[in-house]
Length: 427
Ligand code: GDP
Ligand code: IMO
Ligand code: MG
Image (tube, rainbow, N blue to C red; front, side, top):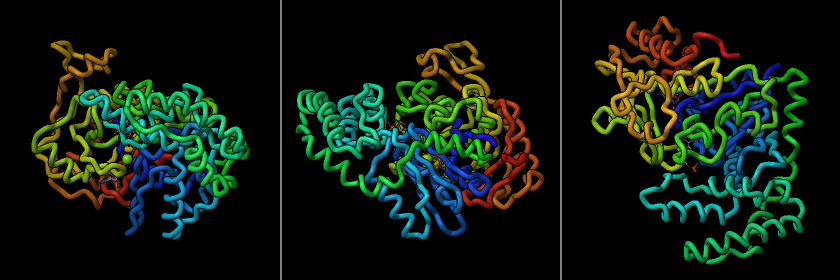
């Protein structure tokens, strides 16, 4: 059986958590392969609402084994806080597996994330302040601390000493902060080692064997295509590989075993933090999307920037990820609009671009070229088949499908599991 990736097509918060949860009962393993607790996924099951940050959303499905892959950066205090919160609500987290190769976020990296943002001033990224960027920088710089290092205190101490040699110079001399001691960091990390130990394994081997047995493995992205460090709107991106390629490197599953890539795309667009966003709205229409769509960050509570659907970035996501199916979420939020603009191309200084401009400056100057589709007034949150939707809502889905480069297989009409229309079964 295959491995299937779920990725975000826009700038995050497309509803990946709900989509993963929907498929949970059909899969044996759900793997988080990138990012850390910068992610925020809201999953609504019946009357219960869960906010997940570090744990894969599949953890809410009994019988599905959740895995934190090697591509993730783990804040251990957050991990156990989240586990305890779920256990208190009756969710069994005992099968969780954590890669020995995942990197851990130390306190000095949370501090550096925050002071770097302050230092950047108007050039800031608007990060979540969780230490994500500095921890990935350490990984690439080969001074990172990995989960497996927690089980050999001598090695851990040596690695922390090595990392702090440079970090303390930066903290004290550039940012005028107090130096961090090796002891404090070792103590901070070792505090969790005993509890973590039984969860730790070679998750690439675990998943490879699962696939050999015929199990279904779902690879769940944090963040999204336009926040990917290689393919996103650099430098206004996160520091990990959030695209389908990252699903392989972040889990140790080879590309030849991926049979399907499901992209989650919102029926409009949102973004949190800084960076270009061609269809962004600054008027009442943006405020309308924000309030009807409850567009406030799950992680930081920041209001999300809102704009119309951008088919150029959807096509880009389809290409970069090899998308086989889209899940179009939050169609219900568009109810009640007289007409709905959809961006079909960009005007960059008088030149039409049907594809993402190769040059970042051009993307900053991109003005959306809109096509205007007729809206609908009906409340569609009770629709359960495509035919239940008003004709104009069906026409909207069909037009964005045509423009976006892959079929719209599932449509979300509300936050709950039930508020879903399946046009083509995903698994
Ligand atoms: P993720 O980061 O991609 O998992 O997305 P978030 O959970 O951060 O944001 C998506 C929000 O939209 C959550 O609050 C979901 O409960 C909600 N949601 C998901 N699908 C739908 C939908 O089809 N309609 C509505 N109204 N809300 C949805
Ligand atoms: P989910 O998984 C939306 C954004 C931050 C910032 C940039 C870099 O819920 O879709 P970072 O802390 O990662 O270094 O911040 O990326 N960002 C997200 N935006 N959804 C997310 O996750 C995000 N994770 C990071 O706002 O602009
Ligand atoms: Mg989110």
